[in-house]
Figure 1 (cartoon, rainbow, N blue to C red):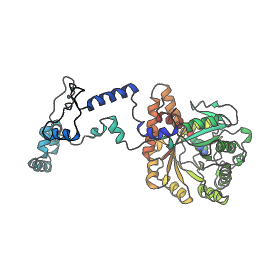
Figure 2: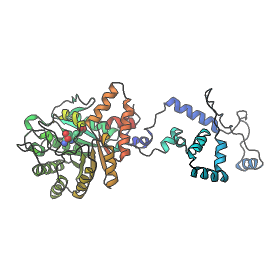
Figure 3: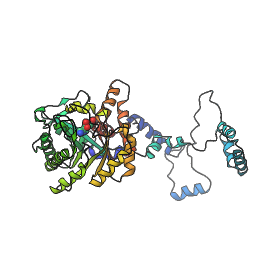
Figure 4: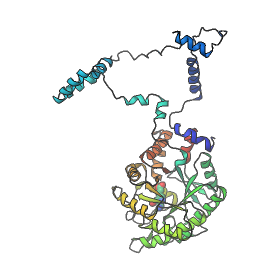
Length: 447
Ligand code: PBG
């Protein structure tokens, strides 16, 4: 397996199609042969000339032999012949330009355009910069590396891992063993950031979700164990009540079904501080209550956790793409939906209101969630804030690619890497993705 150091060198180029070892050595052989500027007939016994002799020979007009330009490859029979030169020369002449401008003024430009295209005067040819793998790699604007990934991990109390039906390839990890093994594998390919999601036993869920700040709770124990094994691992936590709430909502539900904002924020502050105390590096409020970033910042600072960061779920939409996640944690809301706190998928400008609030309240990182259906929102936040932007490629996005690939409809490797590259291109600095480990392996050159 490639080492974590090696990937950072190979990563920028590795999104390009890979060449087999045989193909690569064939290229190297051809290159070596054509780089030796000697006719095949030169005898090995000829003494090597000095630099001065070589220069004198060239000055005297006796340039040494070098291979002729490669023969022009043949087009298939029947290819129409077009002339580029005639029209290029004509276009460059001053007289022609004068005629051209008068013709354009006389609204004959459509007619003229027809002639020029027939004559193949095509001055802009963007394909030149896509001509070879080396050029494509040189001009690639966006690259992804394993350092850009945050791996979400589901943990449960069991000793063994248990598969998640709606997310093929993902498991609820036993916090004591499976979790450690998974993090070990991720670090091996350069993924050193994780975010934890607990599957909480039903008996510990309550209407006020107090288990969320139990310092001996599942998340807290997992953080302490991970920090003990991997002190430099970056641990993100989720701050929200839903895994602990008997109602399945991110906030405390009143009798009439209203999600109570300020009372929920009070619990979230306790949750965030308890996670910081366990050793979390970044707390990530995903609940979408108003004012929670500022309140959590104040609570953390008051307890001395001034260096614990906040990654705000800034623009989190009420999305159908969270379905598989809720199955994984058995955290579906028992009634209603989350539309009174998560954003309306039809809204764009509203993301700016959330952005301003989170910036003002002291967020360190702003998140957009989901990712692929909301690339415009990622770009909006990127262009409106100097803060780092994260994007969450959520469970539904993951399962779609997995299902289509399993059905033979997509090339899994290409679809995964393209989806992540495009999320980064839209403006995300880091991506929370269930593909983190798989994608990092691809980027390290594994199949
Ligand atoms: C809970 C939370 C959810 C996700 C992350 N944190 C679900 C929800 O809001 O209902 C979804 C992640 C995913 O779908 O991958 N606050």
